[in-house]
Image (cartoon, rainbow, N blue to C red):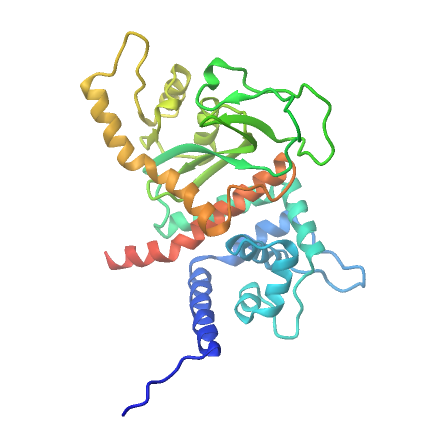
Length: 347
């Protein structure tokens, strides 16, 4: 009788490592790291460490941040994992004799890049590379917003002004504090009532292409109106003329219609019924066609939550939360890029 080979834990670990190494190899083929390194170095000065040795390269630290986002790791955890995993250390560019930067170096790098708006520049450059590969396409844009919950919310009965989601047009643009700031509370977080539940944190106003790849992100307090930030997101997405704009009916307003027309874009925002003016049959049909594509931006939010642990604030403050949203967008776009590139090559 032929003996059936057994698979040990070492074999399983090796197979998983090969899968990760294959993914990292695909990313290295797609991305021109040298051009990104030049951008990073403009916003992050390496200098010398406390011992007089050259500090870690900015690109290496950026790759550590990517690993941190892909695997949902803290600064302490990503330091440990890069030291422990061969595939991780190879991806960031460390030899077997080198140690990973400690958690404080990673934190200082993220802070320096955030203060100088460096992550925004890297995000745009990375998207430019994906566009050149034909992976990211700007023929149409999908717009929506999602709340990122912060655990650092006020305790006890809230004394904060609260807005209700999808009713912002009847409410002020911002909500202010009505009580003294509590210690340990994120000072930039805001309240919103969504689906009947109070939530505290931030809102990311996002534009994606029609495949769901992220083109632009604007970060605000959770209470900020989706409607009032459509033009900001379109400006950040840098769309060509005649690109279509698809969004749900909450974005339909005279101001947004004018903004879309001013940018010479096609207005495919879903129609909204008004008092004493129900939707026509044609408008209902248009809404059905738009909804068949528009849902992909919601799928992007869901995938970031499921794959990378998104939807929860890791940091304190508006600027750092914008960095989190940008890193999640870059991690998501890169995570999907090899599959899209393979599909393109087979067409």
